[in-house]
Length: 543
Ligand code: ATP
Ligand code: MG
Image 1 (cartoon, helix red, strand yellow):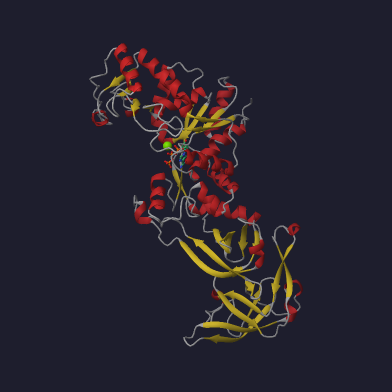
Image 2: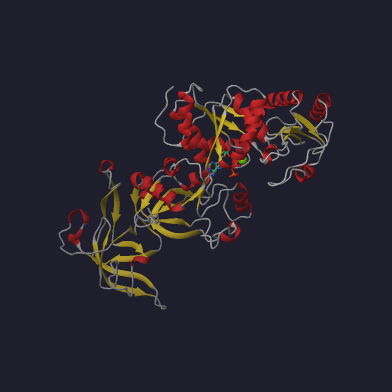
């Protein structure tokens, strides 16, 4: 294995480890806890773990960190697997912390025998009350100096179920005066009667994350344990466990910045609240930053990886603009999405001098002529968007107005001859005439029009429900403002419009650029055509 051209600090470290002969192959792991759905932050973690291993021709395991039985479920395990596959990564092995429970237990006995761990009878409250503060040392537990024999016997009895939950725990014997709070005799095993999603009721004691994780990494042959910055303060404990247990070679923990994105929220706790309080349709609501939500929204996984790659892997936390994520999605779709037409708010236009029907041809993708054309029906009745007509137009108005011209995209120039209104003065229909020599493919009319608008044929157009989305959170008004005060309760808007039949006939979940509207995903719900927004057309990212 050879060093590669490093693009970030993690690759530099790995290169050094290769050059010094410390490692001969790269092994990483992607370590979700199966207590919820993955979100876009996890895609960054996937890029770091799977992506780095791939670059070195190494391996990455899918490691389920399931040491917290009260919150973990098989349902989440299955969802996580599906999400990773959708993103496009393949794991070498699927491993669970619970696979290692027996070994993790044996290692705890070894720590006890080496005088490095003790059974403590303090309650969780007492332990936290005696931990000290950042400026003050903690107080040693009165049980700290129990003999090895007594500790071993008590620990075995804990395992056998002799003591109630929370009445005892196993603690590492490190240093109550350490400036690092995580090193102040941390709890490494607790008593908890809770059915585990895989081991059932086989255990009534469970190891703590900080103790179990280095062991699981070592047993998987992990060379580089890549995690987010909040674990930096836990690294001394990670290393302590490896040193006490004589791990060689010892996995190396490296921390990187978490992904945070403006106008959205990623903490599982808050996302759960949104779902449970009914603000979202579910975990896969297209507005959710969950992987299942992004998939349901129609976002291409390549765009998400592109985004995570472009923001880079660094060591300082910062917040990314949602607009930048949207720009990456838009770039992808501009390249890949077919074009089609729909109108959000249909206004009927009768073309009084047109008889018959014809099929016009429109490019499937203007940048990819090799994809050919689609047929677009045209007749004496079309729908335009109400927003593209102004009864009293502002100066320089380029769309349709009384006695004005506009071009119907890919079809003809029309002239507005008459405006029909109801008794309240609302426009209900336009009577127009078309210019026969102005067909887009062969315009000899000599009429110059500034505006081109989308339209849908009245005879063949289909009813469509169009869903538009706004970000989940409004901008913060002041620093530290709570999410609950920033929620955009009006983040989904529904329109009942018209669409060309091509959209109804296309395959499910396909992405389209709806001319002058945005990028939308096509789907069918209860036999009805639905177009739901992936990303708007407007680029409001300030590059
Ligand atoms: P959350 O705090 O959102 O609930 P978590 O950290 O509890 O997430 P885990 O399932 O433990 O979620 O995370 C699996 C891996 O993904 C961990 O290595 C974690 O550091 C990483 N990860 C989680 N959130 C992010 C994020 N926003 N950016 C980058 N990596 C993340
Ligand atoms: Mg976690």
